[in-house]
Length: 559
Image (tube, rainbow, N blue to C red; front, side, top):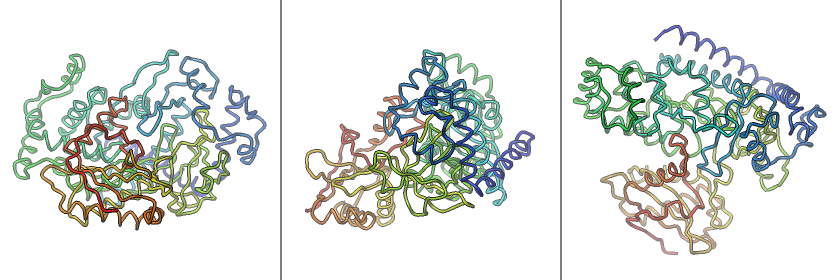
């Protein structure tokens, strides 16, 4: 699809990519200029006057004069901004308020200005430039894409400012772009019901045999799209043949009318898909779209476990692109290639500092700059940005993979506090994910999902390994499976091995009833977390997360 809009987009994307590459050759100079410009711009805000930003001339002065503060220090300001007060954190008009999902803690409000959006937009364009380069090396190119993220604004503050998750804010500010980038009408993303939205995005996208990419925030959501495509394949084919939307979809009359006008019969495409369904017995994305070239979704952290399930839907041969390492507070990095877990720090989207692991328990830790970090080491990230947050701990733990030119590449590992300790062993998401991947290979089975927490009544508590098996799957030799979990965790986390010698009791295995993890995810949605932002942890000390679920079998080991 060599349309003019795509030609323009790819030209801009490669220009942004090349500019970023130049910035990575001198990251400290770019960071210094970013900080200098930001402090000058913010010096007359209420918080800027409080910290006398006009007096700060160097990075060292900035780090010595401004403390590292938690979100609670900014909360009073964001509440006042929501009520309509101006010039508190930023001198620019606040056009939107990002509200974090709350899936890993308390919801937070991040003011968004046009200046803030513009800086992130350049990073997103650079990301697209890297993707286009990777695709062209494989004889592919950017084409229309499928995304099912909601574009729903939650509402307006008392001061008249739109608020909601970060994603809808970005989608609405660049709607003109996404109208022709998506293979389905933008309106489909404004459908509130999650299943109906996914169904409609798939249905409209199935009309286009040239679809090039699937995008979702997390791999778990890519798998959900695949499951819907397979489960409702016959229904999709019928709808395409008839040219009408199903009456049973949860759509209000006004939205149905808007979408009905955009949908029409595609009998040739319906026949093509029917033949595939008849010969293959199912529809998967690669079967439905022969030119499907890539998947874009989060990498690192909890994602690793779900990637191994991609082979269930023939996705394992497609390049997986991380796109951008972004949070509600801003973009930290973009991915320079497909099939890599490390993103390149973006020196012009924020001023970044890194807290080494040895300083994590210090109230005001010493920090390192981007040029001072070391590969293989883990750090917490501090960000200073155009939302008016200074030296703010975004709560992520990253590992430095290497350097791209002179700029570090980051692998997201887990959220701050995303560790599990019966005593002091500090087991992480990466530890348990590696163990479970090894166990599945050893047993030759697929585990639908898993979660590790701690028992309630013992001290020190037991590790509780909760798993859900796919339908028609049984776990043979459950005791041996649990013993291997224990052994592999000792190999993966040496602190766990040391504490298991006499302090940590033997782990326990719980096989949960079918649909248990769907119930837990629905609980999160019921709490107000958007389904497109569910970051389901694999470890937590929250003993109530699985309360009330059916335990089909519990297995213990001898002490």
